[in-house]
Amino acid sequence: MSLEYKGPTHVPALVPVEAAEEMQLKIACEQCNARFAVIGSAFFCPKCGHSSAVRVFNDALTKIEAKVEHLDRVVGAVAEVDKDAAELTRRSLLESAMSDAVVAFQRVMEELYLVQPNAAAKIKPNTFQRLDDGSDLWRTVGARAYADVLCESELARLRVYFQRRHLLAHREGIVDDHYIERTGDTRYALGQRIIVRPEHVVELAALVRKLVGA
Image 1: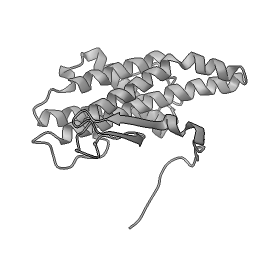
Image 2 (image 1 turned 45 degrees about the vertical axis):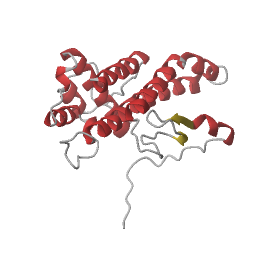
Image 3 (image 1 turned 90 degrees about the horizontal axis):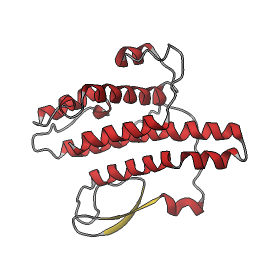
């Protein structure tokens, strides 16, 4: 057995004991009504095995939208202590919200696809973070392509958001040739850092919700 890790060396702070309860998600299974609690996300009921992937996805988007809704209040509280830290907090919350939306989309699409009768036994990692690949995969099981659900402008905006999330995850938000080539976004020049605004996160959540619903 071997293990290799590639990524940042940042070590996150431990969650304080008093905050642990807030991190716990309490769930009631829609199928058998069993009640259980998890840290993070859980798709399958430990009693009957029912998948709650769509509900977990919707819960994730609700939390993301709540984060944006209360952004000014949180940033304002931090600004009373440190204005520089307040701006960093705003940026961090919005960027993490964008990342969370893409990850939630990836996870729910995997679960919904793999239960299809004629689904492939195995798919490449993060297939649904690549919009063209994910759309093509759904067509192989007789579902609609993304272009049949979203209009051209919506799909173009979604592509931009997914590529911006990719920059945040892999290039600390710095624009490269790959980003400009894939999105056609000329508002940024090479080497600039992207800016995530509240309306970007809200639109991203709406678009992935529309695709999952279809």
